[in-house]
Length: 162
Length: 342
Image (cartoon, each protein chain N blue to C red):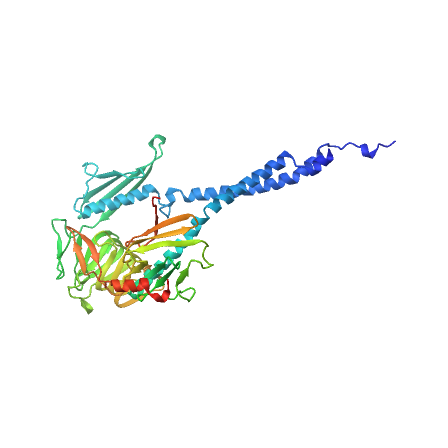
């Protein structure tokens, strides 16, 4: 009798453990499923930052700047009117963001980017986006379509029928 | 005769089992409590943040928002020359917002050429007797004329500008403690003094409205003096333009509290007091902003003024600024420069 008590578990113990595991699973599993969305949020924010920076430079200097996308090389960069990447005020290197960069989430992609037919979101000397466009992002199996118009120059998510 | 200790009964036969379980139960209770608290706090926080009444910021409720919106609507109707009347006359403005607030707006003529605008917004389930009300009153100074008495601004470029709600400022003019709306045209050597005022509209000079008009120089420049508080908010006549007066002088007193929203342009800008200036700020000759001035959020631009103002029937419908077009060759170079590879 004593040996049974020493080596086994009561029903109450098992119930508590099962409940705890269920609660933990309930928290962890949804978090894992929205992980790709978080990655896309980060990527969208990085692109918007680059576009805002290009717009700000256009405002201040009265000349054209833009954000160029490469879907084959998987990078985007803030470029001047000659297509040369500008200095990143934070890293003091080129403002060139490669998606394989360890500072960015893994497995994120820019599948397409088109602003008036070019992979370039360019601002004129008044900081106005010259042509609106769309950017298609992907993280794992999760995709996101972003649209940007000339009035706001803000990336906003749009729904696309499969 | 002593009892065999091996046969001594436990005082509580299940005590050992209970003690064994007590640790588990305590640990499980702590874990469950922590999780329950974390989940409750997280969801409560989300629920509070999702509450609609907080979306407006600063604690404004939907009813308050509706009343403000109705006030704007009444003013817009007044600008269009179609002002509402009063409830007694049955010519008031009324509507129901998408969120269910019933709003009414009245405009009544008062002595001294003043107009009183009254707005009321009501919401809440009536069966419970819970009702929220806000009531806003404001006075609007009349402008130079209605749609039948438009003021024309000469412009050698394009069509003459017509403004149905335009106040011409000639010589020294002072406003104290009033809310103004529409366009204010500063004439040569005029001096506009504003004390504790709100202007929903645009301060203009003839040169600012049309670059073909001569730019005023020196002592002929119009002057805007501000004392106390001033809110200069771009109106609907010239969207996003609070002040377009590239040949005027703005002088804010050291004790003034100023808020501007929209493009602000003047030849000379002196701001000593506290000020928040949102939108592009452009000065010509000089700019002197005090340490307590929050700079424009959108940076600065070169000296500019509209060159292409398209007049509508009663108000400006578009304001355009000069801009050098970007050529396709430049865009192609930016998009394909091989220096970056692919």
